[in-house]
Amino acid sequence: MRLSNLINSLPPYHFANAKQKIADRKAAGVDVISLSMGDPDLPAPPAVVERLCAAMQDGENHRYPEYRGMRALHEAIAEWFENRFGVQLTPEQDILPLLGSKEGLAYAATAVLNAGDIALTPNPYYPVYISGATTLGAEPYLLPLREEQNFLPDLDSIPESVLARARVLWLNYPNNPTAACADRAFFEHVVEFARRHDIVIIHDMAYAEVYFDDFRPMSILQVPGARDVAVELHSLSKTYNMAGFRIGMLVGNPELVDAVGRLKSNIDSGIFRPVQYAAIEALRLPSSWLAERNVIYQRRRDLLVEGCNALGMRAEKTRAGLYVWAHVPQGYTSRDFTSWLFDQTGVFITPGTNFGSAGEGYVRISMTEREERIQEALRRMQEVLRKA
Ligand SMILES: Cc1ncc(COP(=O)(O)O)c(C=O)c1O
Image (tube, rainbow, N blue to C red):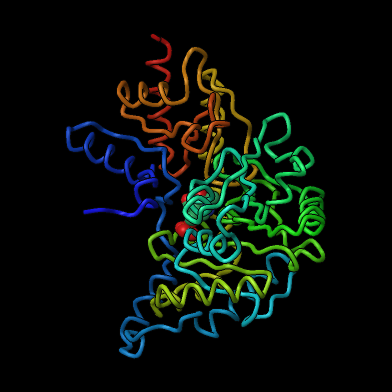
């Protein structure tokens, strides 16, 4: 069959390949420890599962759902956003529920970019930022995130000729893969920059609610005037261990929220109502649920950060997110090290270069395994690295 140029230019999605590799190795009898995907191993809250099951019993909920989500869900999101960030959203105008935030990233880009435009894209990046632009014939302009700049892009280094064609700036804090976080001064600068150059900010905040110690990541919408230039994506996947439910939301600039709603309703048909009811339940959980869950991740983070540093794989103590971004041991590229490690130990981690060229020299290690398994992974790594 003759497929489109677009499909022929689209690489396979890394994590789809990774899942297959893990399945093959497991089938061959290897005890694989996967610290690669950000797929929460802990279950969704029991009250959420109960609400989902109860809503399933009602035949009315088996019908086509509302294209733009139920009013009650919009209201629950607005209430959650105000409690969490102190920002008031207008439920119908500023909020669009999504089938996970990933689709929203691609749709938001589609709503803004034309062929030939430039999308300012951090490097390393979540791969959808690249495919979201290139599938439209737009061009990513990569902004390196450097450790010495706290993994924040240097917007002042972008040439005027690039700025003239730039329509979108992707941002993602807490960041995947570096785990960096942005502060208010950075977001204020970004909003002013976007205004000055008439650029739309798409802030991906999928990791908003995985945080440690006393740190709380902020929303870009907390910056006065941000709603004029920015939208933000949130997700229940990592927040409430609901990755398989597929539910997230786009919030912020009402014009862009409406545009994405128009696009989406022409392509898909909304979120299964029981999942929407489950999401309402989740968004209204007491904050103690999150606090208890985050303590579990925090212990895993401590194990991983200390373990990596003891192995000579320098890693900073992270403040948020599901990953540790560690240096590869001397003498390896990111890819060689991760393949070698998988062959030698069955421990599967992600090469930094899967997220772009600026990931060279790093690996991303996910916290989505039990403490005993993380300890076992570190033990295996120590054993082979000592001999190497
Ligand atoms: C940075 C980032 N954004 C968005 C997503 C998509 O999350 P979901 O579609 O499950 O909401 C992920 C998932 O790993 C991610 O890492």
